[in-house]
Image 1 (cartoon, one colour):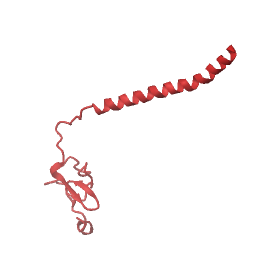
Image 2 (image 1 turned 30 degrees about the vertical axis):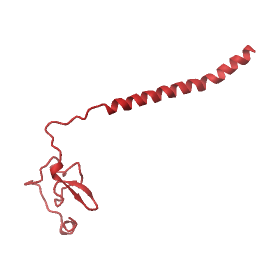
Image 3 (image 1 turned 180 degrees about the vertical axis):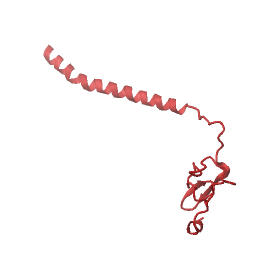
Image 4 (image 1 turned 120 degrees about the vertical axis):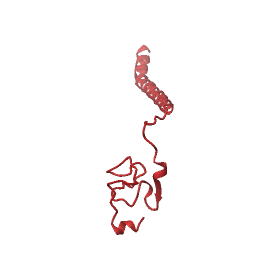
Length: 105
């Protein structure tokens, strides 16, 4: 009888241990998600958002900067490869796109 009980305990111990480890991992992951939601958004000083510099272009989406410039990244996050932080107005690196691309804008 004692041997049967020992075999039963040894047989059920690994699944119980596995369930305990999985539960601890789930609790830890949930706590990390809660902590991550509580982290405040940090603004980088000296950087201004591109709110006034954005345009919506059909087929492309939101674009920052002058879309007629050859160096425009066609992205909502970066203006161009040469002058990523802008501004586009009076940029010395401005080069017009070819006439085919201009007709799209």
